[in-house]
Length: 325
Ligand code: SF4
Ligand code: SF4
Image (cartoon, rainbow, N blue to C red; front, top):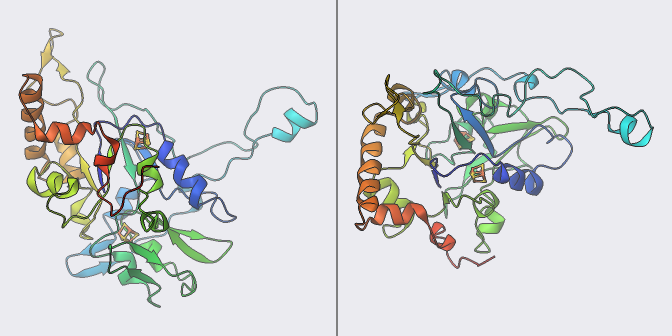
Protein backbone atom coordinates (compact mmCIF):
# COMPACT_ATOMS: atom_id res chain seq x y z
CA UNK A 1 0.00 0.00 0.00
CA UNK A 2 1.10 3.57 -0.69
CA UNK A 3 -0.49 6.34 1.41
CA UNK A 4 -0.22 9.92 0.14
CA UNK A 5 -0.05 12.06 3.28
CA UNK A 6 -0.69 15.23 1.30
CA UNK A 7 -4.29 14.20 0.74
CA UNK A 8 -5.21 12.84 4.18
CA UNK A 9 -7.76 15.06 5.94
CA UNK A 10 -7.85 13.00 9.15
CA UNK A 11 -11.53 12.18 8.72
CA UNK A 12 -11.11 8.66 10.19
CA UNK A 13 -13.42 7.09 7.59
CA UNK A 14 -10.72 4.41 7.17
CA UNK A 15 -10.60 3.80 10.92
CA UNK A 16 -14.39 3.50 11.11
CA UNK A 17 -14.56 1.24 8.04
CA UNK A 18 -12.00 -1.13 9.51
CA UNK A 19 -13.45 -1.01 13.01
CA UNK A 20 -17.00 -1.80 11.93
CA UNK A 21 -15.89 -4.57 9.60
CA UNK A 22 -13.32 -6.47 11.66
CA UNK A 23 -13.13 -5.48 15.34
CA UNK A 24 -16.65 -5.26 16.75
CA UNK A 25 -16.51 -8.37 18.96
CA UNK A 26 -15.91 -8.71 22.72
CA UNK A 27 -12.25 -8.20 23.55
CA UNK A 28 -11.72 -6.00 20.49
CA UNK A 29 -13.15 -2.76 21.88
CA UNK A 30 -9.79 -1.04 22.22
CA UNK A 31 -8.37 -2.31 18.93
CA UNK A 32 -7.90 -0.07 15.92
CA UNK A 33 -6.18 -2.19 13.29
CA UNK A 34 -6.18 1.03 11.26
CA UNK A 35 -5.73 4.28 13.16
CA UNK A 36 -4.95 7.83 12.07
CA UNK A 37 -2.79 9.89 14.39
CA UNK A 38 -1.70 13.51 14.41
CA UNK A 39 2.02 13.99 13.95
CA UNK A 40 4.12 15.10 15.70
CA UNK A 41 2.30 13.40 18.56
CA UNK A 42 2.46 10.51 21.00
CA UNK A 43 0.19 8.35 18.87
CA UNK A 44 -1.65 5.10 19.45
CA UNK A 45 -0.67 3.32 21.59
CA UNK A 46 0.98 6.09 23.56
CA UNK A 47 4.66 6.56 22.64
CA UNK A 48 4.73 3.55 20.32
CA UNK A 49 7.81 4.94 18.55
CA UNK A 50 9.85 4.93 21.78
CA UNK A 51 8.98 1.27 22.31
CA UNK A 52 9.56 0.58 18.61
CA UNK A 53 13.12 1.86 18.83
CA UNK A 54 13.82 -0.79 21.48
CA UNK A 55 12.12 -3.70 19.70
CA UNK A 56 12.04 -5.36 16.29
CA UNK A 57 15.30 -6.06 14.50
CA UNK A 58 18.52 -4.68 15.92
CA UNK A 59 20.77 -5.79 13.07
CA UNK A 60 20.26 -9.56 12.81
CA UNK A 61 19.05 -9.83 16.42
CA UNK A 62 15.37 -9.73 17.31
CA UNK A 63 14.65 -7.55 20.30
CA UNK A 64 11.45 -7.91 22.36
CA UNK A 65 10.05 -4.66 23.77
CA UNK A 66 7.88 -4.04 26.81
CA UNK A 67 4.14 -4.60 26.67
CA UNK A 68 2.02 -1.47 26.82
CA UNK A 69 -0.42 -1.15 29.73
CA UNK A 70 -4.06 -1.01 28.51
CA UNK A 71 -4.27 2.71 29.35
CA UNK A 72 -1.78 3.47 26.54
CA UNK A 73 -4.43 2.48 24.01
CA UNK A 74 -7.18 4.36 25.78
CA UNK A 75 -9.71 2.42 27.78
CA UNK A 76 -13.23 2.04 26.38
CA UNK A 77 -15.25 5.06 27.55
CA UNK A 78 -18.46 4.48 29.50
CA UNK A 79 -20.96 7.30 29.00
CA UNK A 80 -23.97 8.02 31.22
CA UNK A 81 -26.31 7.17 28.34
CA UNK A 82 -28.74 5.22 30.52
CA UNK A 83 -29.14 8.07 33.01
CA UNK A 84 -29.56 10.85 30.47
CA UNK A 85 -31.67 9.14 27.83
CA UNK A 86 -33.61 6.50 29.71
CA UNK A 87 -33.83 7.44 33.39
CA UNK A 88 -34.74 11.09 33.04
CA UNK A 89 -31.66 12.37 34.88
CA UNK A 90 -31.27 15.26 32.41
CA UNK A 91 -27.96 16.99 31.91
CA UNK A 92 -25.42 16.19 29.25
CA UNK A 93 -23.63 13.06 28.18
CA UNK A 94 -20.37 12.64 30.07
CA UNK A 95 -17.75 9.99 30.68
CA UNK A 96 -18.32 7.97 33.83
CA UNK A 97 -14.60 8.03 34.71
CA UNK A 98 -11.98 10.72 34.07
CA UNK A 99 -10.24 10.29 30.71
CA UNK A 100 -6.45 10.04 30.70
CA UNK A 101 -5.59 8.96 27.17
CA UNK A 102 -7.22 7.82 23.96
CA UNK A 103 -6.48 6.77 20.41
CA UNK A 104 -6.85 10.32 19.15
CA UNK A 105 -5.75 12.11 22.28
CA UNK A 106 -3.54 14.68 20.54
CA UNK A 107 -5.66 15.11 17.43
CA UNK A 108 -5.04 18.40 15.60
CA UNK A 109 -2.49 19.52 18.19
CA UNK A 110 0.10 21.59 16.35
CA UNK A 111 3.82 21.73 17.06
CA UNK A 112 6.12 24.69 16.56
CA UNK A 113 5.43 28.39 16.96
CA UNK A 114 2.49 30.26 15.43
CA UNK A 115 2.28 31.28 12.58
CA UNK A 116 4.68 28.54 11.52
CA UNK A 117 3.06 25.79 13.55
CA UNK A 118 2.51 22.46 11.83
CA UNK A 119 0.86 19.08 12.06
CA UNK A 120 -0.28 16.38 9.66
CA UNK A 121 -2.12 13.06 9.78
CA UNK A 122 -0.46 9.67 9.71
CA UNK A 123 -2.71 6.69 8.97
CA UNK A 124 -1.20 3.50 10.37
CA UNK A 125 -1.84 -0.19 9.91
CA UNK A 126 0.20 -3.39 9.95
CA UNK A 127 2.96 -3.05 7.36
CA UNK A 128 2.80 -6.72 6.28
CA UNK A 129 6.55 -6.62 6.56
CA UNK A 130 9.04 -8.51 4.43
CA UNK A 131 10.89 -9.52 7.61
CA UNK A 132 8.05 -9.58 10.15
CA UNK A 133 9.29 -9.30 13.73
CA UNK A 134 5.93 -10.65 14.93
CA UNK A 135 6.33 -13.84 12.92
CA UNK A 136 9.90 -14.38 14.07
CA UNK A 137 8.98 -13.91 17.73
CA UNK A 138 6.09 -16.39 17.83
CA UNK A 139 7.22 -19.53 19.70
CA UNK A 140 4.46 -21.71 18.19
CA UNK A 141 4.69 -20.43 14.59
CA UNK A 142 1.10 -19.22 14.63
CA UNK A 143 2.00 -16.25 12.39
CA UNK A 144 2.62 -16.76 8.72
CA UNK A 145 3.12 -14.71 5.56
CA UNK A 146 1.05 -15.74 2.58
CA UNK A 147 3.03 -16.83 -0.48
CA UNK A 148 0.61 -15.36 -3.00
CA UNK A 149 0.47 -11.76 -1.73
CA UNK A 150 2.69 -11.34 1.34
CA UNK A 151 -0.18 -10.70 3.75
CA UNK A 152 0.87 -11.51 7.35
CA UNK A 153 -1.78 -13.37 9.37
CA UNK A 154 -2.18 -14.84 12.86
CA UNK A 155 -3.64 -18.35 12.76
CA UNK A 156 -6.30 -18.06 15.47
CA UNK A 157 -6.37 -21.82 16.06
CA UNK A 158 -2.62 -22.04 16.60
CA UNK A 159 -2.15 -18.88 18.70
CA UNK A 160 -1.52 -19.77 22.35
CA UNK A 161 -1.58 -16.18 23.62
CA UNK A 162 2.12 -15.92 24.49
CA UNK A 163 2.10 -12.26 23.36
CA UNK A 164 5.68 -12.36 22.05
CA UNK A 165 4.43 -10.81 18.78
CA UNK A 166 2.94 -7.91 20.78
CA UNK A 167 6.36 -7.31 22.26
CA UNK A 168 8.33 -7.74 19.03
CA UNK A 169 6.37 -5.56 16.58
CA UNK A 170 8.04 -2.13 16.63
CA UNK A 171 4.90 -0.56 15.16
CA UNK A 172 2.61 -1.99 17.87
CA UNK A 173 0.25 -3.36 15.28
CA UNK A 174 -0.56 -6.71 16.90
CA UNK A 175 -3.27 -6.54 19.55
CA UNK A 176 -4.22 -8.98 22.25
CA UNK A 177 -7.81 -10.07 22.64
CA UNK A 178 -8.12 -10.60 26.39
CA UNK A 179 -11.51 -12.30 25.99
CA UNK A 180 -10.37 -14.92 23.49
CA UNK A 181 -6.76 -15.09 24.68
CA UNK A 182 -5.48 -14.59 21.12
CA UNK A 183 -3.35 -12.06 19.28
CA UNK A 184 -5.15 -10.33 16.43
CA UNK A 185 -4.13 -7.88 13.74
CA UNK A 186 -4.90 -6.32 10.36
CA UNK A 187 -5.62 -8.97 7.73
CA UNK A 188 -5.30 -6.52 4.81
CA UNK A 189 -8.94 -7.40 4.05
CA UNK A 190 -7.79 -10.61 2.31
CA UNK A 191 -11.36 -11.95 1.90
CA UNK A 192 -12.21 -8.75 -0.03
CA UNK A 193 -9.01 -8.84 -2.07
CA UNK A 194 -9.74 -12.41 -3.12
CA UNK A 195 -13.01 -11.08 -4.58
CA UNK A 196 -11.28 -8.20 -6.38
CA UNK A 197 -12.42 -5.62 -3.81
CA UNK A 198 -9.93 -3.19 -2.25
CA UNK A 199 -9.33 -3.17 1.53
CA UNK A 200 -12.06 -1.25 3.35
CA UNK A 201 -9.70 1.51 4.57
CA UNK A 202 -8.61 2.20 1.00
CA UNK A 203 -12.00 1.91 -0.67
CA UNK A 204 -13.80 4.13 1.87
CA UNK A 205 -11.16 6.88 1.85
CA UNK A 206 -12.74 10.08 0.50
CA UNK A 207 -9.28 11.52 -0.15
CA UNK A 208 -8.49 8.75 -2.67
CA UNK A 209 -5.01 8.54 -1.29
CA UNK A 210 -4.36 4.84 -0.68
CA UNK A 211 -2.88 2.87 -3.55
CA UNK A 212 -3.01 -0.93 -3.40
CA UNK A 213 -1.12 -3.37 -5.56
CA UNK A 214 1.98 -5.51 -5.98
CA UNK A 215 5.40 -3.95 -5.50
CA UNK A 216 6.85 -6.17 -8.21
CA UNK A 217 4.31 -5.07 -10.82
CA UNK A 218 6.49 -2.69 -12.82
CA UNK A 219 3.59 -1.01 -14.64
CA UNK A 220 1.54 -0.58 -11.46
CA UNK A 221 1.18 2.53 -9.31
CA UNK A 222 3.05 1.08 -6.32
CA UNK A 223 6.24 0.29 -8.26
CA UNK A 224 6.04 3.68 -9.97
CA UNK A 225 5.77 5.60 -6.70
CA UNK A 226 8.28 3.49 -4.75
CA UNK A 227 10.92 2.54 -7.34
CA UNK A 228 10.54 4.85 -10.35
CA UNK A 229 9.74 8.19 -8.71
CA UNK A 230 11.06 7.26 -5.24
CA UNK A 231 8.49 9.50 -3.56
CA UNK A 232 6.94 6.77 -1.39
CA UNK A 233 8.97 5.77 1.67
CA UNK A 234 8.57 3.27 4.51
CA UNK A 235 7.85 4.50 8.02
CA UNK A 236 10.82 4.13 10.38
CA UNK A 237 12.89 1.98 8.04
CA UNK A 238 15.50 1.70 10.79
CA UNK A 239 13.19 -0.72 12.64
CA UNK A 240 14.48 -3.26 10.12
CA UNK A 241 11.26 -5.18 9.37
CA UNK A 242 11.02 -4.16 5.70
CA UNK A 243 7.58 -2.47 5.85
CA UNK A 244 5.34 -2.82 2.80
CA UNK A 245 3.21 0.23 3.54
CA UNK A 246 4.84 3.33 2.04
CA UNK A 247 4.14 7.03 2.55
CA UNK A 248 4.36 10.05 0.28
CA UNK A 249 5.75 12.63 2.76
CA UNK A 250 3.73 15.74 3.60
CA UNK A 251 4.36 19.18 2.10
CA UNK A 252 2.66 21.84 4.17
CA UNK A 253 2.16 25.49 3.12
CA UNK A 254 5.39 27.52 3.04
CA UNK A 255 6.66 29.14 6.24
CA UNK A 256 6.38 32.85 6.91
CA UNK A 257 9.56 34.85 7.35
CA UNK A 258 9.98 37.72 9.83
CA UNK A 259 8.31 40.15 7.36
CA UNK A 260 5.29 37.91 6.90
CA UNK A 261 6.34 36.84 3.40
CA UNK A 262 6.53 33.24 2.25
CA UNK A 263 9.86 31.60 2.95
CA UNK A 264 10.18 28.81 0.38
CA UNK A 265 13.65 27.72 1.45
CA UNK A 266 12.81 26.02 4.74
CA UNK A 267 9.88 23.58 4.85
CA UNK A 268 7.26 24.14 7.52
CA UNK A 269 7.73 20.63 8.92
CA UNK A 270 11.37 20.44 10.07
CA UNK A 271 13.41 18.15 7.82
CA UNK A 272 14.95 16.59 10.90
CA UNK A 273 11.53 15.32 11.95
CA UNK A 274 10.68 14.02 8.47
CA UNK A 275 14.01 12.18 8.33
CA UNK A 276 13.25 10.67 11.73
CA UNK A 277 9.96 9.29 10.34
CA UNK A 278 10.89 8.32 6.79
CA UNK A 279 14.68 8.04 6.68
CA UNK A 280 17.26 9.87 4.59
CA UNK A 281 15.37 9.37 1.28
CA UNK A 282 12.85 12.03 2.30
CA UNK A 283 14.97 14.96 1.06
CA UNK A 284 15.07 13.67 -2.50
CA UNK A 285 11.39 12.63 -2.36
CA UNK A 286 10.30 16.15 -1.38
CA UNK A 287 12.53 17.71 -4.05
CA UNK A 288 10.91 15.49 -6.70
CA UNK A 289 7.42 16.34 -5.47
CA UNK A 290 8.17 20.08 -5.57
CA UNK A 291 9.66 19.85 -9.08
CA UNK A 292 6.70 17.91 -10.45
CA UNK A 293 4.21 20.27 -8.78
CA UNK A 294 5.92 23.19 -10.44
CA UNK A 295 5.81 21.45 -13.82
CA UNK A 296 2.09 20.84 -13.45
CA UNK A 297 1.41 24.38 -12.21
CA UNK A 298 3.34 25.64 -15.23
CA UNK A 299 0.93 23.84 -17.53
CA UNK A 300 3.32 21.03 -18.41
CA UNK A 301 2.60 17.33 -18.17
CA UNK A 302 3.53 15.39 -15.03
CA UNK A 303 2.90 11.67 -14.87
CA UNK A 304 3.64 11.74 -11.14
CA UNK A 305 1.06 14.43 -10.36
CA UNK A 306 -1.57 12.69 -12.47
CA UNK A 307 -0.85 9.44 -10.63
CA UNK A 308 -1.14 11.11 -7.21
CA UNK A 309 -4.27 13.10 -8.09
CA UNK A 310 -6.01 9.83 -9.10
CA UNK A 311 -9.05 11.31 -10.84
CA UNK A 312 -10.28 7.81 -11.60
CA UNK A 313 -10.52 5.92 -8.30
CA UNK A 314 -9.84 2.59 -9.97
CA UNK A 315 -6.36 3.84 -10.83
CA UNK A 316 -5.55 3.48 -7.13
CA UNK A 317 -6.05 -0.24 -7.14
CA UNK A 318 -3.90 -2.58 -9.16
CA UNK A 319 -5.80 -5.63 -7.93
CA UNK A 320 -6.59 -8.60 -10.18
CA UNK A 321 -10.19 -8.34 -11.44
CA UNK A 322 -10.88 -5.14 -9.46
CA UNK A 323 -14.61 -4.64 -8.93
CA UNK A 324 -16.35 -1.29 -9.28
CA UNK A 325 -18.09 -1.38 -5.91
S1 SF4 B 1 3.96 -4.27 11.21
FE1 SF4 B 1 4.29 -5.53 13.04
S2 SF4 B 1 2.53 -6.93 13.04
FE2 SF4 B 1 2.71 -6.12 10.97
S3 SF4 B 1 3.99 -7.63 9.85
FE3 SF4 B 1 5.35 -5.96 10.61
S4 SF4 B 1 6.12 -6.78 12.54
FE4 SF4 B 1 4.29 -7.98 12.05
S1 SF4 C 1 -10.21 7.88 5.18
FE1 SF4 C 1 -8.51 8.69 3.94
S2 SF4 C 1 -8.59 10.92 4.29
FE2 SF4 C 1 -9.82 10.00 5.92
S3 SF4 C 1 -8.35 9.71 7.64
FE3 SF4 C 1 -8.34 7.78 6.48
S4 SF4 C 1 -6.63 7.95 5.01
FE4 SF4 C 1 -7.10 10.06 5.79
